Image 1 (cartoon, rainbow, N blue to C red):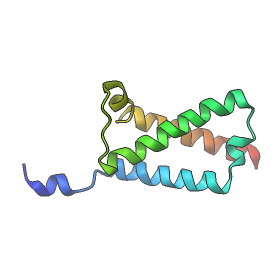
Image 2 (cartoon, rainbow, N blue to C red):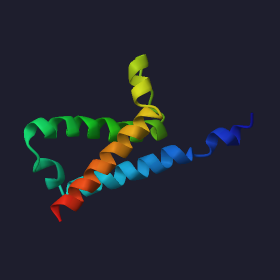
Image 3 (cartoon, helix red, strand yellow):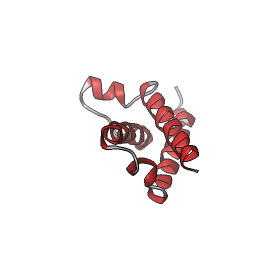
Length: 98
């Protein structure tokens, strides 16, 4: 295997990181998407967001987790599903509030 194959960016990871960065900026500009929810709904949504955004940034940065279940949760397809669900929830909330 050639070394330049490993040096190229993984497009799925790059897209996931860009989506996560856009969602993080969007939440900085419009925090009411989450803060307007009641606490029993807000806490699981915050946990989902931490998982989705954190996992999207970990893989491109080359960070590895030690425990098997953590590595599994932070790698595709689970991390991409979490990012997709979190994105969909935020989009629905934005449409609902407008």
